[in-house]
Amino acid sequence: MVKPEINVTPMIDVLLVLLIIFMLVSNSAQARIEARIPDSPPDMPFDVKPNPDSLVFVVESEKSATLNNVRRYSIDTDLEKITDDLKEIFELRKEYEAAAGNPAGSQPSQTVMVKASKSIGYGSVVKVIDRIKASGAGIVGLQIDDLSE
Image 1 (cartoon, rainbow, N blue to C red):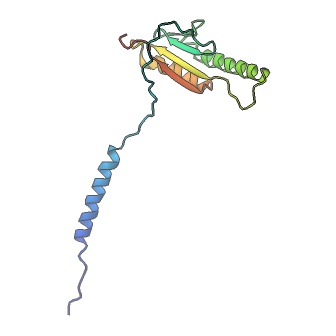
Image 2 (image 1 turned 90 degrees about the horizontal axis):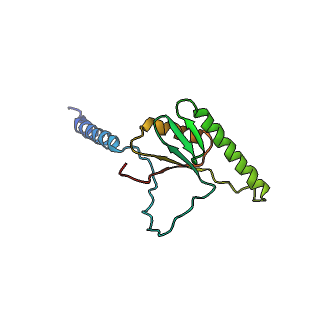
């Protein structure tokens, strides 16, 4: 009498097809960067004065940037100075908050905005953002005034 055997070929075929499907599906899932995009601002008939606590870096060209239109930096040589100056500003803000009697848990603003026109190279802007993040800034925002540049 012949002993019956299980034919596993159809099961292997199904498993291989499932493996190929899972490989294709997993490759199509891409990494995502979460971005919060603000709504368009309402039309304001009056001039709004900037907050004195705001920190705005303007990347003016491939080689220069300014902080609040006061401090000028060379992107090629002053990258460490950007980090040091921002650390100093954040420490002064912490001391001011402590002297003002605010609770220990309250954090002074460490948000820094970066402005650059479309003509500025990506690398220059990234160098400035990297130095800002190295200084301990909480949020780094990209500010766009005119998309037609």
